[in-house]
Image (cartoon, rainbow, N blue to C red; front, side, top):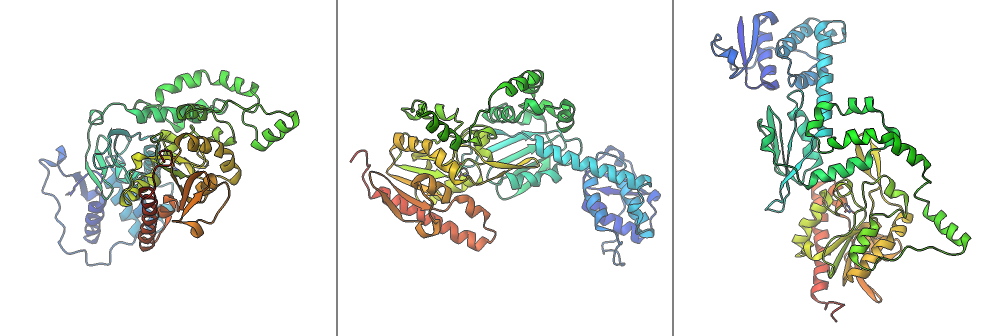
Length: 489
Ligand code: URA
C-alpha cells in the first residue's frame, strides 16, 4: 500500500500533482491511502510517497475540464473518502472517456451530489455571512469581521465573492476550519477560529434587521420555502433571525390588513391631477429645520420608489456647510445603512476629495433622489437610474436641504444630480469643472459621478479620468477659498 500525504484538507493542487505521478506509474486506486499532513492517522504510517522530482514523462492524463472543475470544488467536501474517490474516477476516465456521463455509476453520482452540496454551501455563505464592524479604521478604512459555520470547508471558494463585493473595506471571515482576510490588496487565508474571535453586536446588525423587516412581505410568506432557503442551522449567526418567529406569527394578520389598505403611493402625476380636480391642494406642513426635514423624509411616499427601498437616505453633514455634494441616489449599501455615499462609490469619492484638498466632514453630502431604485436579479439588487420624473419629484427634498444648509457651492456628481440641482438636463461633458453662478443661490459645479470611474475597464483611462475628477474637485476648493461665506457676507 502506498501512503500519499497532502498538505491540507483542501489541497487540490497537491492531489492533482501526486495523482499524475501515481497514474504515470500505473498505481491502482486500491493501492493508495490518502492522508492529510499532521492528521493522527499519519503518525505511525509508512513513509509518505515521494514522487520523482521531474514531472511524469507522458503528456499527462486526459480528463474533461468538467472533472477538474468539479474535483477542485469537491476537495472542499467533508467526506473523508473524497481523495480516494477522485483518484478512482481519474483512473476510470483513462479507460473510459465518457465515464462521467454514466450517471448510474456510484462514483459519478457521488461526484455530482458532492458538487451540488458544495455549490449550495457556497451560495449559503454568500447569502448569510453577516459582517460586524470591529473598528472605524484608523487609516480611513472600515474594518469588519464575520463568524460563519459552513457545512463544508468552502471558504476558499466563497471568499472571492466578498472580495469583489466589498473591495473597499477590510474584512475577515472566520470559520471553524479556516479564516479569510482582505486588506484591499490581498486575500489571505489562515487557520480557523471560534465565534468569540468576532466581537459583539454593533450598529450593522440593526441595519440588517431594518433591511430584513423591510423586505419581508407577509403576503408572500411560504414558511417551507423560506426555511429551505434559509435553513434553521444558519439562524444562530444571523442578527435578523430573532425577528423571524414574530414576523411569521403575525404574517397573515398583516397580509389581511395590507389588503384592506388603499394603494399607498399614488402616481405623482395622478396626485397632481386629483388636486387640480378637487380645486385645492392639501399640502403637508413644510419642515422648518434640517432635523424636521429628515423626520418628514423618513415617511416620504411622493413617488413609488419608497415601496421597494429599505428606507429613505437623507443627506448628512454640518448644517452650515459651505459645500454641498449631491449624488444620484443611494446604492445598495446606502439603502441598508441609511447613510449617503458609504459604498464603493462613496469610498472613492472620499479618497479623491482628500486628493483635492477637501474635507468630506465639512461638506453636506446628499442625493438628488432619496430612495434606492433597483431591479432584483437573483439575490442581488441592480442599481437602476432614476428617471426625470423621479428626480423632479424628489427635488422637493433637495430644495429643503439647500434652504436649510445655505451652501456657497454645490457639486453635482453626474447627470441625475445635475438635473436635481439645476432643474433641467445637461450634458455633463459640456459643463464639467466650470463654476456656474446661480442668481440668488449657491453656485454649481458639475462633474462626473465616481461610479463612472469604477466602471471604466481600462486602467489607464481610469487613472486619467480620476485625475480629471480630482481637478474638478480642486476647482471647487479654489472657488471656496476665493469666496467669502455667502451667509456671512
Ligand atoms: N451613489 C450615489 O449617487 N449616491 C450614494 O449615496 C451612493 C452611491
